Amino acid sequence: MLRSLLLSSLFISSSVFAELVVVVGKDSKINSLDESTVENIFLSRTNRYPDGSKAKPIELKNNNYRREFYTRLTGKSPRQLSAYWTTLIFSGKGKPPKKLDDINMVLEIAEVDTGMITYLDASLVTDDLKVVYRFE
Image 1 (cartoon, rainbow, N blue to C red):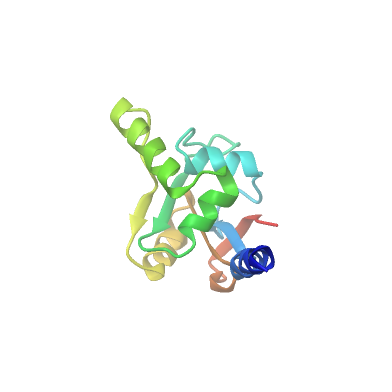
Image 2: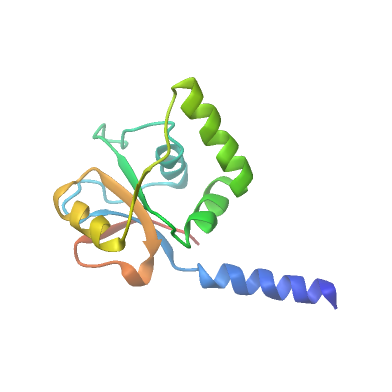
């Protein structure tokens, strides 16, 4: 009984985030990215897209999708991710993506900054954004 309850809750929680996508501004020259590139950009392992242009990852503060995004992308728990960022920051080798207060700020930046990259629910994608990676 407990096992089926756990499996059900796991299915429900993963289906809530089934439409998580990574996006860039519509004028970006980037049309698609693979999982490895997305992971490297968001974990500050690189600040460049495959074409050599600058990648500027941003996130929403208090974003409900953050945990799901990083768990699906890296397999890291929030605690592991926090330790990762602490190590990177103190070693001077990187910093987490810039955090913005609301989706409107993200959309405004996307309109003018072709280097911007973020993740959000597919239902929030506007004509000013281009999906470059979709979680399966």
